Length: 455
Image (cartoon, rainbow, N blue to C red; front, side, top):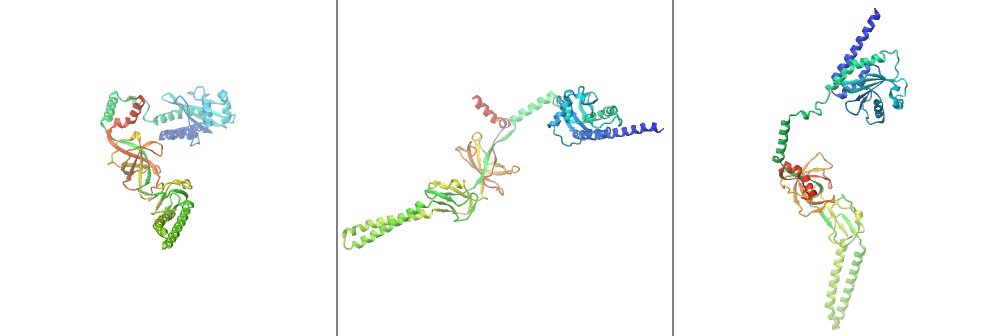
């Protein structure tokens, strides 16, 4: 009696497991979740050591996953070796039991992957709409002939009961939009859609806009120019330094100016002695008395030269006329450099008083609407957009910092941004007149085509 009840109890247990796995498969919310169920939960019905799932729907098989591995590198060497073994399966549509000898010339790869001579493979095809869609590869590393269920029975259980369930669940989770969906739209709809697009191209008008590089520059900086012609001995400050009024900025080479000052002082001393001598002799000597006027003029000239030399000597150390931040090129390049009077050496700026300099490319020098604000996007803050208003646009092109012929334009902030440093670069969006959508989209390609064919 007990022997009759034992098979019945085992059958009930198998049916319970199959029903549970079927519910899990149908409850999967995505194909990834279904792959996890197939690879990791099928073991409750048939004990296996490793499972692989292949996608066979396309022309090229793909390895979808491996049991126990949440992340799979599909380009790895081991994945390519599994695909190479898959190619050796003759009839992939038939459930079968595979061993080392079934892989022919790929048996070397088998040894690399398995390393166990008694490994058995259960191959279970999964058909969707009578077409091979998936392939389940189950590896039994330490299979014992007396271990239930036998290999043949295990293969039949999965093929007859679970494979159809997995196929139905896989089909249900197929993406809603398929390749042929667009071709199911009636022809009249396509015609109406095309006419609507054509009408929109010529009836919808949008502001013509251009994108140009820009940079944050000081607004109304104080230019420090060379007051003398001479050689810069050293630069006291560094770019970005905060200076106060009368702080030293740079110094000239003092050798020649101080030597000229000494010569001027000596010339004044000589002229004073000559004049004094002429005045003493002039009381008795008419000739000496006649030279007094000339010597007085000479002394006056030498005094002017002395005052000029003193003035030049007082300018040998250039000081800051106002407080501000230093903006200049590399200070090392100025040391030992001869400068002319009026040559710009540096600028003093207020970091809080900035504006935007824009370089409009020659090919995009369209009419810019001065009433429309310019949108500024800085590279360091791509998520923020600032607004500025055009101050002027130069009518003469210059070479920009990117070595492109451009028209320089300045714009003032509508609302000055906080903590924006000088020198920050970004992109400016400038808006022009309204044009048709057709012209907006094809302006540049049209110009390039006309330039290419010469029309």
